[in-house]
Amino acid sequence: MLYILSILSIILGFIIFSEITMYRPPKIEKVTVLRKIKGEKFRREFSILTWNVGYGGLGKNADFFMSGGKTSKPANKRVVEENMNSILSFLYDQKFDFILLQEVDLRSSRTYKINEVELFSRLPYLSYFAMNYNVQFVPVPLLSPIGKVKSGIMMLSKFEPYRVERYALPGDLEWPRKLFELKRAFLLTRYRVDSHDLLILNLHLSAFDDGKLRMKELEYIKSFILKEYEKGNYVIVGGDWNLIMPGLSKKHFEFTTSEKYLKNYLEFPLNWTQPGWQWAFDPNTPTNRSNERPFVKGENFVTVIDGFLVSPNLEMISVKTIDLGFENSDHNPVHLKIKLKGEFNGRKN
Image (cartoon, rainbow, N blue to C red; front, side):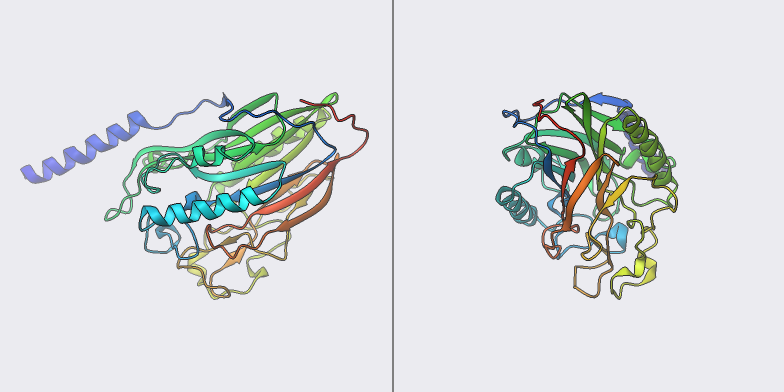
């Protein structure tokens, strides 16, 4: 009896500790620059890359327990270092004006205390970070718990924004699961372009829910971007939508993954996209693969859940998914080239 009471006391104490330390960010939070360089003069045409880097822990040899796999984190620090080195080398070698990153860890247990935010901030960009996962100890799975997690989304920019903010997305999971889950948000950067603004939203929507959270998040985003567009502003929304892109189905690519591992892959809701707004994604190359097992081409489920939504006053030049074979992340990056419609004086921020 005493033994049982001791166990119950430990569990209760842990729950109280998790409740007290639960991350409770404000609805809108100012974000300061991590690395400041001289911003370039704004151009009519520019390029954007979005990439969920999977915290450097979800390369082609990884699986993940919440997706039907067995593991909760990389086998060792070297795995994370090798993935991060390859990701950083790719970004160093390419030329983009903006880079939107998701799942960037900040000294988390699952990434062996590596400060990935600092590593990405070494790239020659102005850099900004917004937290969306901040839990002192994630207790699952019981035999190999994830432990402490600090993670979020980053914006790397060649141009200097005049305002950067973290916007909390609505909705929450049921208690006590919400004590150990992400607090979703988008990272908003604003750039002055002549008499209007260019807004770039970097987002990472919910994943392991029945879809209700994602619908709440989508409605909030739609309301926000329509109000900004009505003001005459340019709007680009990019990132990991965790929804199969409009017009595509689960069967768009060939795979042998069992349907039981695909319950969290939902198709984009019909009639959500407003007239004139344009989707920018590459339907010919997958951006995400399933994690019930290490990646084998033709076997794992693959789909397109990463891309961009752009306002009617922007013109898409090209969009392409860069096929890296899921070597260092369970996502492939998406590259968009775009330009402003109408007259533009090249005003610097």
